[in-house]
Length: 431
Image 1: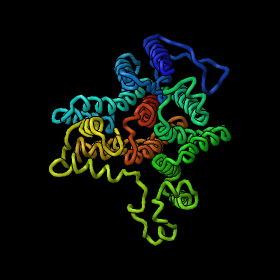
Image 2: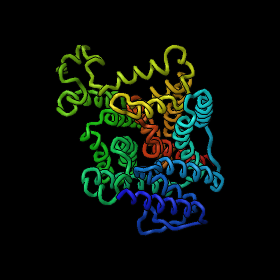
Image 3: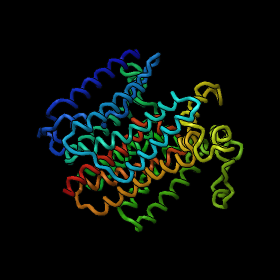
Image 4: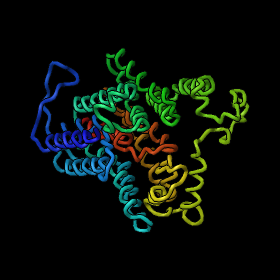
């Protein structure tokens, strides 16, 4: 059945190449279903690529199909920068990102495993390439909405398939990213739906999608994606209402704390059973990290930090790919292959310089999105800016305790894609 992965991969790759190089094509207008719109090839390729980030094609075997898909998309996005009619829009976040990538490359030279270092480099390249490509291609709100709504429909299909296992295992086994990656992807889709709720007339439908994409992480009890969603929604309201939003954000925080202590599945996942932590202890400040059930994360992080970060490696780390090389070639903590913290991996591989550069990159995306949101009067640009900034803030938090970079096609591609589209539409407004 996993052979279907290869079939689907070749089909979607064929259409991606076909769209990118064809002069023009017809798609339905997202603002008027009865009307067609004429798009150029790169615009069609962008819509296809952004909409299908949740497709991983993780077929088992000698060929790492996920890695091949990532590399193919990077090559096509790079070529697309020279085919697109518009120019890529550069700004401070992208300059910082390039500096970060240079630092990643530098780390390969003193890495004990340059091969793993190059794989890490490729994973970090994709968000930048997809954002630059989007900024060069997307100029019209129709293309932005078509890509965003397309991504939402694909995400909706994955929600359905997630809760009907027979459908997924029979029709497309391994095609969609793991549920952890899906939950992180849903953060951006959730925020996109909330933005459409506030700034379009389709209130009921968009509110339904907003609630729908919050539910999976709650039902699966994924603490990282739950917190990422909470952060993203809070930043969304800060974008919209500025400091007037503080009571709303405080209310969200209070409701979140109450949920942790009143919903049994959340409480059991959050705390060690032997500690019997209560909300009264939380109020009195008696709850510490020792009470949290980390599933051995804290111990693993300490082990990796002692091995690759402390004792002289604090500034530059032990080299790009050090952590992956160690975890792939040694049986540690039950055979885990990833550290479940991109922050820890950045520190171990590339030191405080690497982590600082990356954090600055993502924070400047959030700040720039906020600036564009407050300055523009264009509704579509407001939707895109608030989605980019809020979802980036949520995803930024999840880097603390998940492997977000490993899933970059499904996770980081979303806020970076929205940010790139925002830059493209802003360029049209500016000129």
